[in-house]
Length: 345
Ligand SMILES: Nc1ncnc2c1ncn2[C@@H]1O[C@H](COP(=O)(O)OP(=O)(O)OP(=O)(O)O)[C@@H](O)[C@H]1O
Image (tube, rainbow, N blue to C red):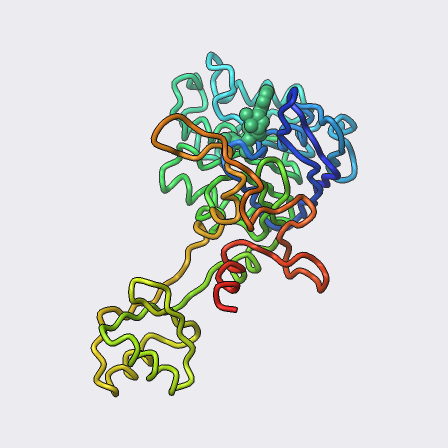
């Protein structure tokens, strides 16, 4: 288990991590999401005592990193795949780590086999592709057989087979009861891997929720209909007790009624349709909506322009992260789903 309480980091005047409080639990994969520059790597570095917090604490199974004896046997991490001594072979790199952490030599061959690098064990890592370097970094993380694992953007540079392998590896590690914390800025990738999500933007906690609830709250399916006789279509739907919302461009959006039923209804009333299409809002859209105001730099025609935080009705304060089902009296979740509900209320 990893527990963060009020974790904060300033680099000079720059607030990189802003009072983060959350717990990463064992037995599940927890995805750590945020746009570029959100503070994910800084948070992970503080978990590993590679950076000092300005304030707040991180505990690994109740202890500060510095209190862990042979830390690699408690917590393994892949932060920067290419941060290895290029002149050393893969096996020697792992052997050095093993010897300085009280880990048996025999473990080196085991982890090389686990990550599929046995055949290049004696090759110098400077000739490794990014994908091979990622695998070597994962081997190092697994070396001490730790109960807690951190992976920072582990699928970067991997081919589809490698991505599939990492996904299964993380799920298996969690199924063994380990704590698995993995960062990404890709919602779609996390949707396939993580059971729980922690989302940050500009260093602040924006969501701490199960993937199931995130999907439930943020993905919406509906049917879009378009007819040259929109008013007659609206009347037909109304008479059938179906609620439709006109959204411009002559389109109607209908929730909770299958497209087949809507098509049949239109046919019964000899209504021409120019569109009848089931729609599904993607999680990627939901994530982008949730973090839109916290993106540091938006693409414009010219130079990067800092985003103006706090101007949108969606803007969250640190006190109102999206949680799994806000209790009565608590701030209600915002984001894509809520925006859609507002539109209809
Ligand atoms: N050593 C440093 N000195 C000054 N500022 C830093 C330093 N490291 C990070 N930052 C700043 O802190 C903020 C958070 O950076 P961090 O790398 O933790 O974000 P991230 O979420 O990991 O981003 P990415 O997805 O792009 O890797 C950014 O604005 C970054 O520019």
